[in-house]
Length: 254
Ligand code: ADP
Image (cartoon, rainbow, N blue to C red; front, side, top):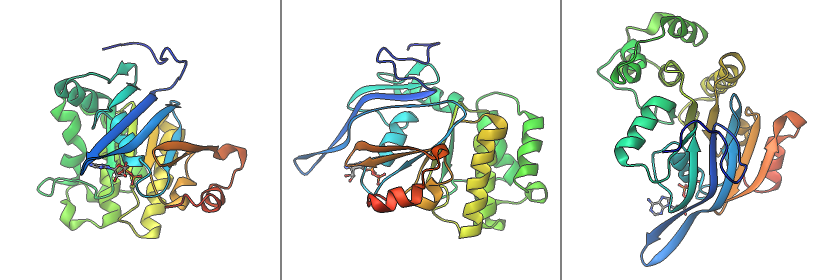
């Protein structure tokens, strides 16, 4: 395990990086190239969207970056740790210590209250909860009067806001969000995207979000566009680029 560096030999920098990453699947005797030599770095305290049509490799890239899946070849670096070649046990530890997840389907435990769901990853890791940060997140997310409710008593938007608090309260190196607005109405989706953007600005959180929705991608600072397992566009939204138009013109909106 390589510790303490944020730069690989190739010069790719960032809190997360993929270098010459290849992921293939075997299906019915044919090889599917889900990631085709992807090299990309993700800067700290930035909100990056990974966009592209269905089947372009978005989820595969996210899963490899987050230590949920291992690549066929190439390197992944996450907060100074090289993930390539780590055992399942070591990968579990990396995920626990460095990563926060937000899923399309919220993935809250139904028998636990909102507060218990938020605290669970921190307490399972044997760490103590940062109560100041918890109060801040609960306030910003408007969850103050929902903390004793179970997920079944919350709307989809409220459940996703609980999931956001759970992801951020451990101060992870990177929050990975996988289609976080996919199950939400437009207003709740906007609240989630606003919050993610705000967490980058106010808490220096690094966020990497997979989405096939150009409207969601437009909230990010940077949009990485995949097609057929390759990076085909890398759009800095600060330059005034209209991401929705870019994705529609290139037919990569999914
Ligand atoms: P996206 O997230 O952009 O929809 P994926 O990363 O899920 O794309 O998939 C990329 C490619 O890899 C697709 O062709 C998909 O069918 C294939 N793929 C993904 N997971 C598997 C798997 N477990 N087995 C076989 N093929 C897979």
